[in-house]
Image 1 (spheres, helix red, strand yellow):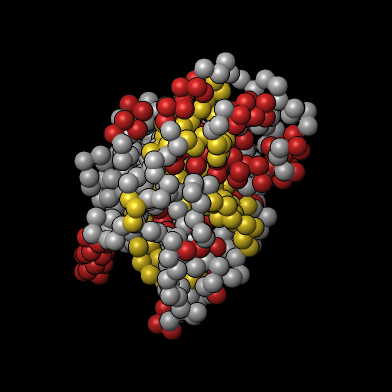
Image 2 (tube, one colour):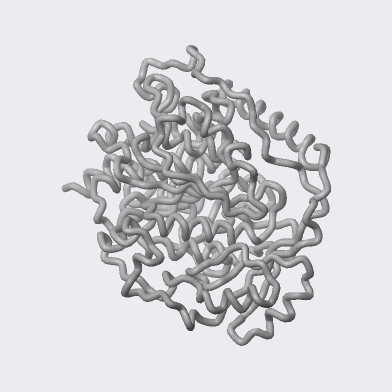
Amino acid sequence: MQRRLILFITILLTTLLKAANTPEMAERIKYKQAPAFIYRVTLADKKGTPYSLHHPSRFLSRRSIERRKRQHLPLDSTDLPVSPSYERQIKASGATIIGRSRWQNTLLVWLKDSSHIAQLRTLPFVKACRMVWQAPDSITPSAERTKYHDHFEEHHKGDQLYGQSFHQIESLGGNRLHEEGLRGEGMMIAILDGGFNNVDRIPAFSHIDICGSRDFVRPASPSIFAETDHGTKVLSAMGIDEPFYFVGTAPHASYWLLRCEDQQSEQEVEEDYWTMAAEFADSVGCDLINSSLGYSKYDHPQMSHPLWHLNGHTAFISRSASLLASKGIVLVNSAGNSGMGPWKKIGVPADADNILTVGAVTDEEPHAIAPFSSIGPSQDGRIKPDVVAIGAPAFLVNGRGVIMEDMGTSFSAPLICGLAACLWQSKPDMPATTLIELIRQTGNNSEHPDNIYGYGLPDFWKAYQAAHP
């Protein structure tokens, strides 16, 4: 208890120190591209498209198509790309298209003059236009490499094969899956985050099968590996394999690193970036998505979400997230860290249907809920969070290449995501919705789920046994 109290005080002081230096007291620079605006343009239909559901290989990878076939999931109109004809007409008006969503049939357009949107609204195929980003006056530069260690400290070496990560994996029965040879082989996971500082340089990450990376934020970062190390920590919880020091939950899986969180402002456009990243993950054939992101309050109050939005189908990002299982993808999303604040509730897209929303519990028995862990239910009465995992604190590897402890539902989510990949590896034809329900039902609170613990700590070994009677 004393160790946990000291750790909590240390993290609290670190957080206060960080808040004292950013963004108000840190050196800010003028935003060079101001004034500028981003609008979400919703299109009425997909008429004139050259694409057909009979030829999906023109817009989806073979791996994506095979994932759907295994689960007997049909393609539908949401899978078709946005009409190129409509894009050409919008470009001809002088707007710059910076992104698109085929699932929601929208375009993101960049404008230097907001009055230009009146012209777009007159186009017969434009259904709606909504401002989702406005250039800030000034920003704090975020892309910065940190110094890193090229090896782990000897005092972090443990007697167990898992080293520092043993307890957080053992609490979920994950070590039993690994003993069966289920370590994520053949599974592909997308990590949606704000940055992956030094992942390309720290030796402990060099053995991870990283398929590639993409930046969906505009303007793009000079390097996603110079941004925040939040994504670095998330990846470490799943992908690192350094015996007796640190082993992740899915060390043999493949990973896509996708940046969709803008560190320089908090605006609704991040829901569009997230959707674009999720659609990309679908198109390249990812099986799971780990999203340690969530939103409720934005810099501009008119963009923020009131509680009644949290029904899984109102927020733009949640509508996208609620589609993922129908595409054969399991989304694992952190519940949020608002439990001690005035909001207290989950954010979006943690409210989505057919996903695993993950809360955080303490690392010691009986694994009490972390006081910061956001609570449910969704506004339409569904249990949230779905499950919980250790996150107060969890062991991780940061952007300095150091094994450390950190708190947050951001770090309980990848524990669940990696083990879900290992479980799915054993039965890859299982539908995403079935896998989600199987994990819920093996939780230690499944007989009486509530909106604090959800279905509780899942037991992935029991889930494996249930899937292979």
